Image (cartoon, rainbow, N blue to C red; front, side):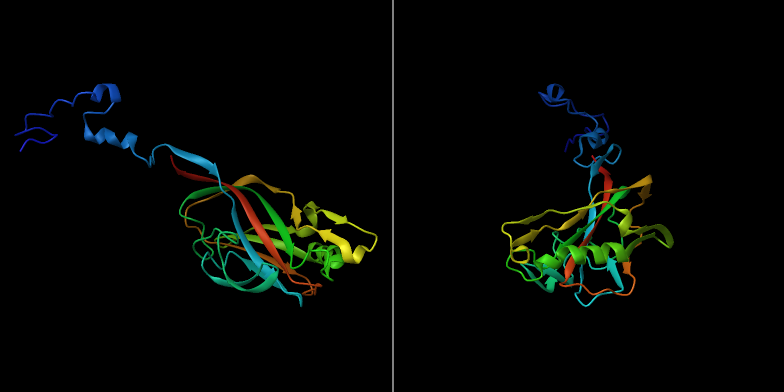
Length: 230
């Protein structure tokens, strides 16, 4: 039976009508340039790598990030309650414990967020949130290790932080509303290029395991460009 490659070694058959107008190649080996995934022409897109860990009110010496991927069970704040939950992409986008995804990344910055358990005006601990923020920021530092090489030591107090606080009446401790504390992006220069599937670790340590008024979630975000087939 004749095929696209021709009958009995006589060469390829003529292209069907309309093939020239559609720029369809005669040679099937040229179809690669029309593929959905083109590894010869990769593209870089912004894709942060993030993870969320809970800091207990009683205090903690160390928090280890990126150790529980999507689908793992971990204590986190959800709907105003700190309890064991199944991690979703709200909490992390890591698929495997302590391993970068199967793409190349270029990390250019890092930022942090502190999310309090309760921040509504009726919560008794709301007015203590600034004190909790200060305890964590002044007492902690961040460490990032790639494979077995420490790459970054960063006291949290060296990062610029911002939050919104408002009061609706003169009774400050009953009506104050505090937002999560967010940091600016701390730049990493030169940029850190990470090969696919490389091991890494990210952790925070707090001198003296300081207690806070209420538990809070801490979020680490590695700002990066991901290289993928176009």
